Amino acid sequence: MVDWTGWTIEERDGPYPWVVVEIGVYPDDSVLAGQDRKSFRDSFSTLAEAQEAYPKVTTGYREVNTSTAHLPDREMNAWEEQHYWDAKDGASEE
Image (cartoon, rainbow, N blue to C red; front, side):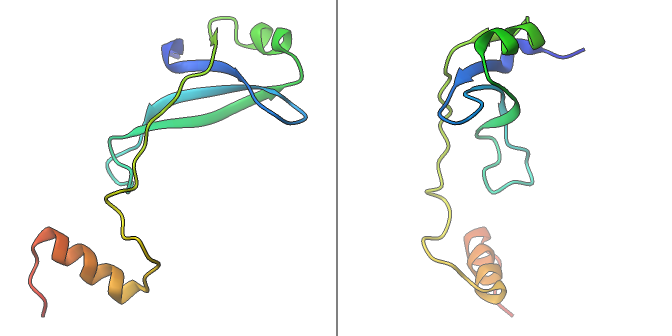
């Protein structure tokens, strides 16, 4: 059974302006772990179509706040990335 409390029908720009989104939390294996996540689930041409397909979902915009402040501010190669995270975790270099 789906818990619809984290879902919303929102209006956006585009050919199918009514979208259904699920608000959740990024999993532990994500660089955004523990932060709010908004996932697209469906889209419709009209609000009526969206409400008919998802009658238990409320209409309205819900902001999610995610931060990337904990991520490096530049692109890294694999070696640089591993050493960056090892240093953050307190691991010693070999």
